[in-house]
Amino acid sequence: MVKVKVPATSANIGPGFDSMGIALGLYNYVTAEETNTGRLEIDIIDSSKKFLPANENNLIYKSMKRVFDMVGYTPPGLKLTLENNIMVTRGLGSSSAGIVGGIVAANKLSGSKLSTNDMLKLAADIEGHPDNVTPALIGGFTVNVQTKYAVRYVKTELSEKDLRFAALVPDFYLQTKKSRDVLPKLVSMNDAVYNTSHSALLTASLMSGKYENIRTAVGDKLHQNYRKRLIPNMDSLFRLCYDNNALGVYLSGAGPTIIAIIRTDNKMFGCNISRVLSGKLKGWNLHILKPDNDGACVIESN
Ligand code: HSE
Image 1 (cartoon, protein in one colour):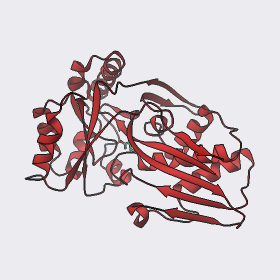
Image 2 (cartoon, rainbow, N blue to C red; image 1 turned 90 degrees about the horizontal axis):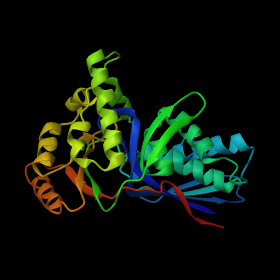
Image 3 (cartoon, helix red, strand yellow; image 1 turned 135 degrees about the vertical axis):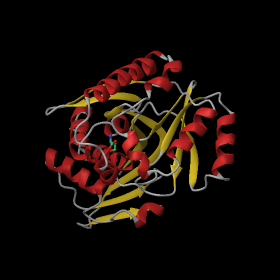
Image 4 (tube, protein in one colour; image 1 turned 60 degrees about the horizontal axis):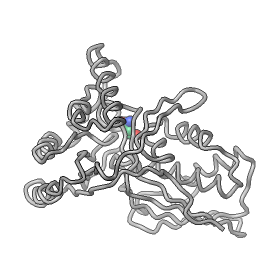
C-alpha cells in the first residue's frame, strides 16, 4: 500500500505562460493498494466523483499504467482510493495533481526505479506543458522549459512567513481547451518582449524577495486579456484585490480562478474580500493558501 499527497498548483503567474508555476497548500491524496482480484477498483471519496471516471480511463490510473509499462511491472490487481480536495477544472492544477499523484504512487509500488527527473519528463509529456506538473512534483516556485529530452527547471522555495496566495474560485468551470482556443495563433514582437521582460522581472523578484516589483511583474499580454471574456467580473475582482493591498493579481493557469499574492500580515484582505463575495459578487469563494515547498510525497507505505 502506498499513500501519496500532492499539492494544487497555479501556473503562468501572469507573464510565464506555459512555463512558470507555484505549488499551493491544498492537497489531493492517492492511496494505491495491490490486490489479488486481478481487477482495477477505484473509489473516489469526494464530490469530484461526478466528474471523474472510476475505470481504466481515469487519468491517475492512466498515469500509473505509463509507469508500470516503462519499468515492466504488472500489479496483480489494483485498488485506488482518491481524495480530491483540489477543485476540478478551475485552474488549480487538478489534472497535473492526478498525473503526478499517479506517477509517484506507481513508481513507489514498482520499486522506485524512476528518478525525479524521469517522473517529471513523463508527467510533462502526459500534460503537454511543464508549468503545473513541475511544482506539483517538487514544490515551490518553478521556472520550467520542456525540451524533447527533459524538463529543465529551477526551483525557489517561497517564504510562508512572507506570502499567501488568495485564490478566488468561482462556482463555474472552464475547460483548459476552451480557454486555450480563444488565444491568438501569433502575437506581435511588442507583446512577446512585454512578456519576456515581465517574466524575467517576476522570476528575479520572487527569487530575491523584492515583492514591491510583483505588481508590475505579473503584467501579461499573451493570454489574460483574451480569456477575460470567459470570466465574468474578472476586471472588478482584480481591482478589488488591488484595493485591498494585493502585491499582484493574475489569472491562475487557464482560469477561471483568480489569484492575489498577498503579504501574510495583510490580515484585512480575507475579511474585506469575503464581505464583497457574499454581497454583490456572489458565486466566488475565497481560499487563502500557503505556498507548498515540498511537492508530492509518499506519506504512508507498507
Ligand atoms: N499554461 C496553461 C494555460 C495552464 O494557460 O493554458 C493550463 O494547463
